[in-house]
Structures are given as C-alpha cells and as structure tokens.
Image (cartoon, rainbow, N blue to C red):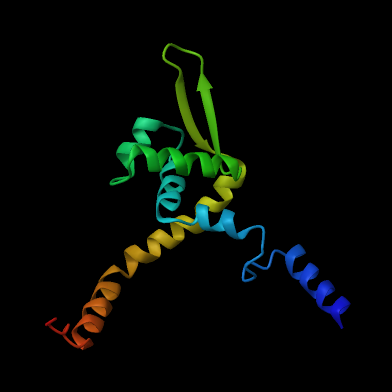
Length: 138
C-alpha cells in the first residue's frame, strides 16, 4: 500500500500537479502570477524597456519591488536582462520566447478585468452592503 502511495505521489510531482503543496512549480507560479509580475510581463509585450521606463510604466511599484520581480522573472526564464557596457551600464529588459508565450494569457487576464470592471465593482459594493455594520468596541 505504501509503495502505491509513493508511486502516486511521484506521478503527481512529475506531472507538476500545482495543487500539490510540494509541486516544484508552485513557487515559480506564485512569483510570475503576482500583481507586479503580471504587469511587468504585460508591459514588456510592447518591446524592450529600460528599468526607468518599466518603473514609470508600472504605476505604484517601488524600485525595490521592480528589481525583485525582474530578477524572479529572469530566473524563471521569462525575461532577458541585456547589459550594454557603457558608462554607466545600460540595462534593457525584454521577454524571452517563453515569456512571450506567457504574455498572451496574462494580457487576456488583464483584458478580462477591463471588460468586467463595472460588474466586479458592483458585486463588491453589493457584498459590502450585505455585511452587518461593525460593532462598536466598549
């Protein structure tokens, strides 16, 4: 019986069962589908960007968060970091072929939010109206 469970577990892990907490792809999926990573990848669809351009394009992101996300995306093989040896060095970020293949579904997700924005906001407002008012503390 134990051997059967081990085989089943191995099969799940080999198949990258992202519902399994031990799936090796979960951390990559978490990092590449975060709010910031999604926006960075979507911004790079338009073509290569320098760090300052990305920082300006992705409103609200700090330089530290942008840097961390770019490193995670590069590590996952989705973003290429090209350094031109000038003084100071010029760094340009672009999508890899793998990144381009992810960009389509991510942009579709963003477009979905755009198409359903009014419905989502109305649903939140409706839900909030149905909640009991907060109790006053004594």
